[in-house]
Image 1 (tube, rainbow, N blue to C red):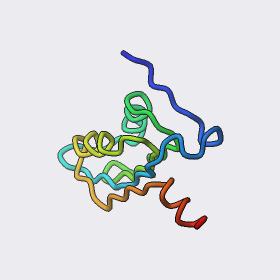
Image 2: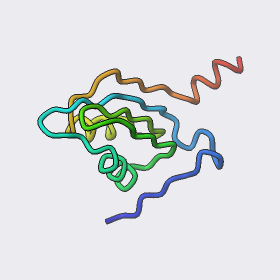
Image 3: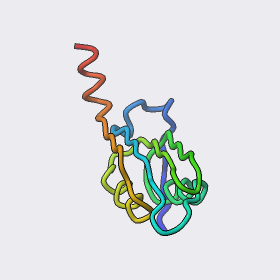
Length: 97
């Protein structure tokens, strides 16, 4: 398997430009936030990962350049909703201008 590299948020604020947040609701089996976090960390490039919740609901926060891959994975784990994908570079440019 290829090694997944992650750039620390302090090193490059916009190395991963999309702030991706969503909720995963249990579908047919209990959710495991540690399992989900480990999978995301080992399969997707990004940083600032937060995966918290319970067996029924997990909240995900992750900075990545490929949010669609994260959404696809999370949808395979459970029902996803309250999806927010924000382009942090565009946000920063808007706030500075």
